[in-house]
Length: 67
Picture 1 (cartoon, rainbow, N blue to C red):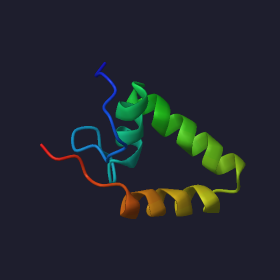
Picture 2 (cartoon, rainbow, N blue to C red; picture 1 turned 180 degrees about the vertical axis):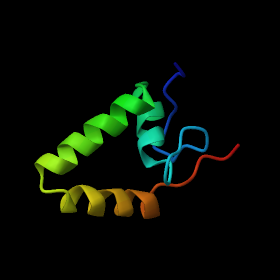
Picture 3 (cartoon, one colour; picture 1 turned 180 degrees about the horizontal axis):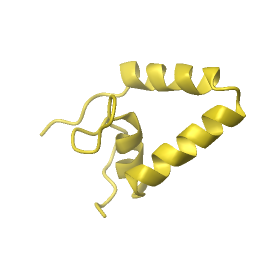
Picture 4 (cartoon, one colour; picture 1 turned 90 degrees about the vertical axis):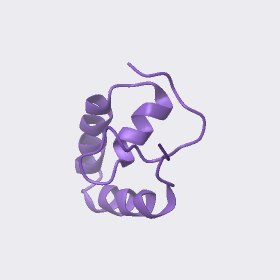
């Protein structure tokens, strides 16, 4: 497991679509898979649209981590 990094940034290493969940996982010090599963479950429980909208907003607002 990697150590949490300062600042919320999209991941370049742990990305499936845009690196949002991977970046959140790095920031929290959690497993990227755990964050993705939790994100999908919460999105489905909230009728999916808010989760998709939140993901797109985070994709646009979160800077990508520089190498």
